[in-house]
Image (cartoon, rainbow over all chains, first blue to last red; front, top):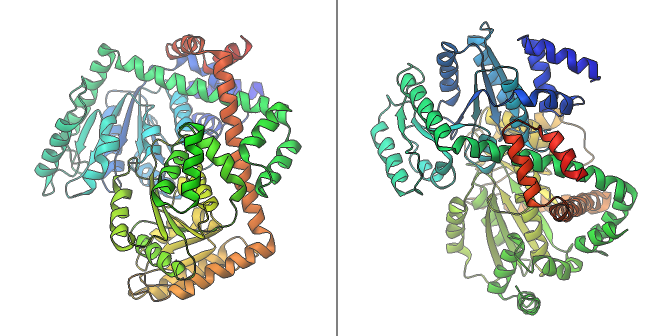
Length: 313
Length: 313
């Protein structure tokens, strides 16, 4: 994208034009030409949005819950965004489907922006692409950004680190699966949600979660457990309240600043790394690299010796 | 680990001592001190093992199939290894459980080595750690290495790239889930397996797969579809035969060398990157980095400008 095109696009997106916002988000998501320029122009305006993460194992009704939350926030905020991230999907099929379903309900609302992201084709990885998208939406004046991820693995944990408040959604009857989310994800949850709480077993699930919390590492923030039914809307006000309370605590305690710093560090380190790789490409050169790789592949050189040789040259 | 300790460990592991193999695998898996030294010593001996990948969505009976395959290969090879990788698990709980179950059946067989890997705590990521572990086992004289991964996401695709032959395992009755594996994973499968083929719907599943293959990008290798029942052992000889045929084709066509080259390239590039980061740490310094990060976090500097400043200094 030419420099003037970027400037034009920025102006239209700032004005709230949804197609321009979508285009700009794509530019930074895929690190297209103009992305760095746009990010530099937008960065000073970031840091204003409330960023809420919704994560948990599949089948927890997260999409419906996010949809409801968007509606609830929309009552008090003029611009809400949903960023739905599916690290388990190497392509956008599943995510796009979710989009469509949500769209049907929300696409007449000019104040809600929706973006789906799958795990393929993001320079620097999905977590960084998500961070860039969130930053752009933040800078363009979005009041609340809901980041939804599916799954309980390391990539989801990385993606969700960009948010201010992490809601972990479970449902009754997951049984042993609850054990599976315990160790890795419980420690990053700020609010625990038992969704589909009208189902049998909700009490037991809430009790299990409370017990796990009591065993977990002591944190200054006391993680609340909220019961919701995304379908009926029951418990939604309580969930919004719990998120607000965490936000207030986070700002007071300095946790908020600490998370922002961690996010800034990982972005700066990643950009440094990219800059170095460009420098390296110039220093090593593709033909020398290819020759070394061929010798490593046929085992006449080990990879460590190859690197020493390439950097010496 | 001191240099002499590494040499001793290497000698014992080469002799087939299982505890030494396990220790050496841990050293390279976690990139502990001595890892680079061990890898350098072992690398010239790599490239001899047959490396077979087993992947697919959860619930396909992959572990039982891998267990059976290990037994079948053990009849013709003296040393077989299973590397079970679970990218969706941020901790080793699930993987270890699978280990135990397999162990019960196999742990009296001195010729079978088993290692579970979860997604946490691997320098350079899970795919690279898997590649290192496979290389060590290969160099130590393992004849057949079975790499099992759970799931169908990008991380699984990355992990499975280290193998010579990829088997994608599905089961009857997955329904729409088969659609979900289509786009991303079908293109890396060399052998398609319909496991639990005694269940109703196996014909339909095989037909669906055949149809997907006919729609997929044309490859010189004609991907076979094999029906198995890991429980009863039906179809196992046919599966081993299909894997052998792919191996023969791969060596003849040059595909084998190409994959080895791609693996060598990603290892060399990753090591180059690590070397550069060490160089960078010296050049930039933690205190300058921390100061820049703090300014980025409070939005008085954008990350791109921070990187320019740090590299200029």
